[in-house]
Image (cartoon, rainbow, N blue to C red; front, side, top):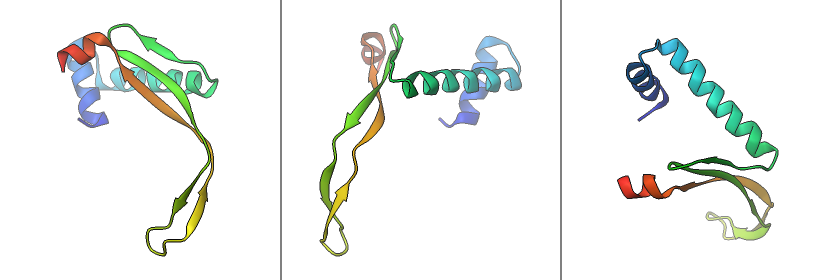
Length: 89
């Protein structure tokens, strides 16, 4: 399912226009992004938790040349599914 299909499904289920559904989805994504950027986590009971994880710097290899390269440390977004979501899948 892509974003357009998700917006259409939200609009249909909630009985709102696609424009309103798009605004709602954009607002949700923006709120989650801002919260994760601050280092906090977002928990939706029954659905799951969005959080930030830190990856340490490490050495990797260039697949074409085999040369060792340094990969910088970075923060990555993480999602852990809740019990109810896991049970339904």
